[in-house]
Length: 84
Image (cartoon, rainbow, N blue to C red; front, side, top):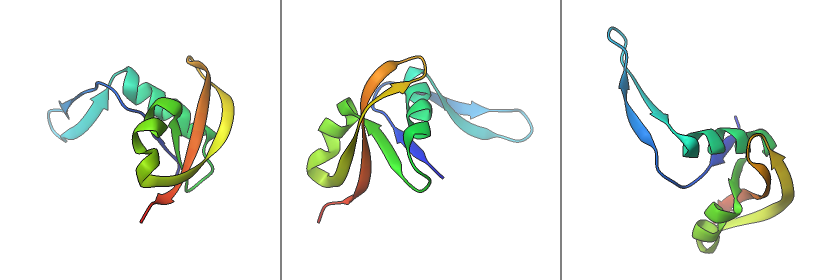
């Protein structure tokens, strides 16, 4: 499993009439989904905007500038662990 995390507005809700599912939509979700492709299996990938918000609480490392589909090049980071 790979995870992309991005910060921003989303629309979320329940879909379906027989088998209900909770889902989220929006550009924030799309950006996170596209960033996860840069992560190794078992890793969490964030962009620079998100990293600035979480850096004091996490250990991580930069991946450098990577082309993200539909977003151009973005500075991406891998989150290795929560800080103590």
